[in-house]
Amino acid sequence: MIYLRSLLFNIAFYVGTAIIAIGGLPTLFFGRRAILKVARAWGWTSLWLLDRICGVKVEFRGRDNLLHQGCIVAAKHQSALETFALVTQVEDFTYILKRELLFIPLFGQYLKLSNQIAIDRKSRSAALRDLVQQAGAAIAEGRVIFIFPEGTRRPAGAPPLYKSGVNHLYAAAKAPCVPAALNSGLFWPRRTFLRQPGTCVVEFLPVIPAGLPHGEFSKVLQERLEKATNRLIDEALAKDSRLAANLEKNAAATPAGD
Image (cartoon, rainbow, N blue to C red; front, side, top):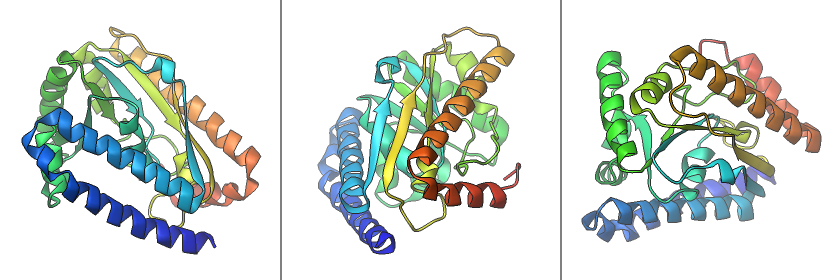
């Protein structure tokens, strides 16, 4: 039954994404904010499909900690789920994403015209320079910057592997940072077809104020994110012990440097 539901969801997700992308084409001529409304509609639609078809609900906690102004939201990244779930929580946002996404037909146009920040990860120095310059401008305009500090998806239970980009961004932008912990990898594991039913939690943690020294910020961010993420994983496992199979599989298959 889980296999069938997962199959139906995948079909509905991609068909729904295509319909919204095509239906939203006129917004490409009306500026960034119009495009962001399409993105939020896509996010809410995807969450609804995930709930109704797969029985995966998403609970948002700590929304009072989320700043609706120029700030950084540094989120754990365990699955594709948070890429569309996070956009439902703020009106004006910008993602830090890999440059290759710009070359996806139509989707890339939405990213370009909504001023998402695409980074060429092959050139580290140029990537950091572009990140600081573009993100600083976005925060000055009052946008919320979403960044995944580990750079790519990490399975639930895998050792943390934080990159330096978020530290450079925090220091250069002189903006507060809201950590976002989650346990999505238990319900939508990366590189896995199946979607496990249950309640995924995305929790916005207390704000880290601007201006902390580089080393202190890095330590505080990682400690808060890892502690809260482990707590959310333990909470999910206490409700459904069957999810432990995903956790054990992920931890065993992922070396620390992956």
